[in-house]
Image 1 (cartoon, rainbow, N blue to C red):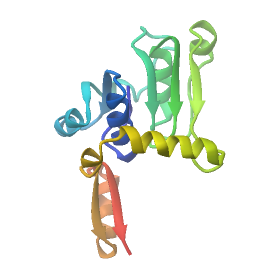
Image 2 (cartoon, helix red, strand yellow; image 1 turned 30 degrees about the horizontal axis):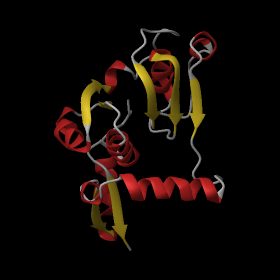
Image 3 (cartoon, rainbow, N blue to C red; image 1 turned 180 degrees about the horizontal axis):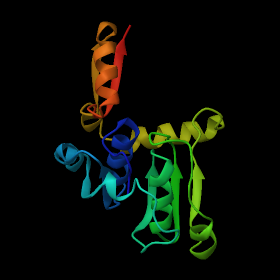
Length: 174
């Protein structure tokens, strides 16, 4: 599953995981993005509201693995719902930097929480990641995941970002 799936990182994760043969559940608070996410390869959807509030330390097992860009309660709930032996890659803080959960998923279900760092990662790891993207990510599909805007549009874009109205990546020409 991928949280904040209609965002920039979430869009790429959804498309890449689907291309690698995984059944991808997209988590989004915006039902209007379901068509977009289906085109990227998502096969099921979960409303973000189901995950963004405090939940129990262990919940029914739902996910074999996940990519989380939210953090906060969403990440804690994703961990609590991950199946025995699963892994969750945390790579964002859209909801916040906290992790208000427990160690129970880790010690009772052997769930791994993996931090993703693109800045300090050694060059061979970064090259392997870029090679995988180059080989597996459909370039035509990639072109649907971003929009280009002028620098003068930043105030309007900032308002849309804060109102959760932006889908995919935004490229700003300077």
